[in-house]
Structure formats: structure tokens, C-alpha cells
Length: 228
Image 1 (cartoon, rainbow, N blue to C red):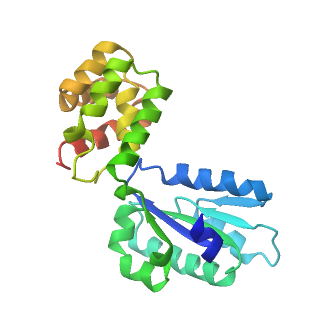
Image 2: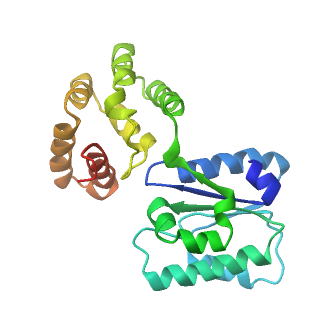
């Protein structure tokens, strides 16, 4: 909020599932008190179209998913050029940009040149107190039994360790754990998360929900397996 108020810009980075879009939505929700007209842009074609307009009455832009991990190099450079032009053109307009960690790290020199590192928030860098707060909120949301909630909170080596989540964001991992449909599944998740995830991946292969769910289960597995 401070970055938006002081510099009209904020860049939110993080691995998948850290809550980049969620945070952007939260910021927009708070700013709506001021009755600002907003526009979500999630493709280069949308951005080019908006860039070409001679007049506009938008006071807040959210560039979400403009950059993505499987973007070709040529697409990335073209997108960054258009984004830089957009930022220069509309210095007085508030703009929120979400960028995956991989893309941010890979092209940090270019983002720094555009002065985006001056308004950068990295959601991978949550401290343990914030992670604990997220866990409590998700466990409450999913009605986790108090005894299991206590055990989950005490699993600091597994969930709150010093090694940052490099593959999938902390909230997504905890959310997946909390969505276990019954006590037995939750119990097995706590005892042997890798085995439980392996079984779930095998089940998902046979499921019509595979495309919807498998990505996050596999990324969770990689997170607990140190990226291997």
C-alpha cells in the first residue's frame, strides 16, 4: 500500500501458490474505498489494446500473468518493452504487477533497469510468524480438528523450516494439507507427506480432475522433496 501511495507502483513476486494474485486482489479491495476504476490485464494483446487508447478513465491497473514461467524469450522481451512503455506513459496511474520468482530472478537486471526493484515485494520471504498466522487461518477455514491443528502447527521442521519453498508457495502447500477429506488422510499426510502425495498423484492420473489438481500436488511433492 505504501508503494502504491508513494510511487504508484508495486511489483509482487513469488513462486506458484504464494498468493500474488490474492494479494493484488486484497490491495484492490482496499483501494476500492476510494471508488477507483480498475482494470485487470492478463495478456499482451490486452495491454497493447489499452496502450493504444487515446483517452481512458482508469485509475488502477493490475498486470497479472503478463509474465509467466514458460514464456519464450522473444515474448518476454516484447512484453517487457510494452510494459516499460506503459509505465512511462502513465506515471500518475497506480499499477500492480505480479511476476513469478523464476522470471524475476532470471531477468533481474532488466527489471532493475526499469526501476521495478524499488517497489518490489517478495512473498517467498515470509517469516515464521506470518506463516503460522496463515496456517491458523487456513485450518480455521477448513475446520481442522484442534488436536490435528496443534500437531500441524508443531511440524516446524517440515513446514516452517529455514529452507524457503522454492517450488510452490507456502499457503498452497498448507491449503492442500487442510483439504484432506477425512481424519485418516490427514493423519497420513502428517506422518508421511511424500507417500501420501505419491498416492494422490496416482489417483489423479485416473481422474477427470487431473488437469485442475495435479499441478499443485506435484509441486507440493517437489517442495517437500527439496526440488527433486
